Figure 1 (cartoon, rainbow, N blue to C red):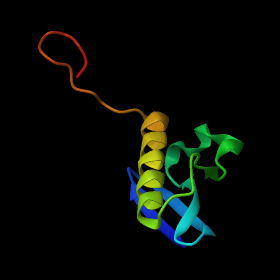
Figure 2 (figure 1 turned 120 degrees about the vertical axis):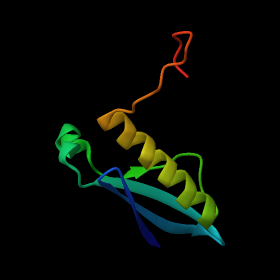
Figure 3 (figure 1 turned 180 degrees about the horizontal axis):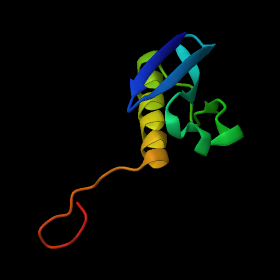
Figure 4 (figure 1 turned 90 degrees about the vertical axis):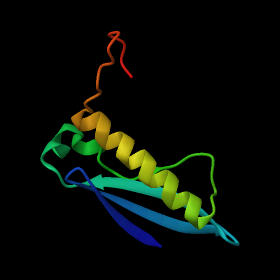
Length: 87
């Protein structure tokens, strides 16, 4: 099974492979965007650990992991609170 999610100018490609009845191993890959060259040859598929997962959970975890990886690549703006600590 396959799904593609767009996020911040990138594509998160999620692929599930059945490992048992109603359970799946999941990989994701980040494609696109101008900043992908930062990743270089490491832009391959990433297998998520601690599986197998149900189909719905696998897609959710892969999307969250892909979004976090993209946020690390291009940075996230975090608003400062009034006391100077980062929220």
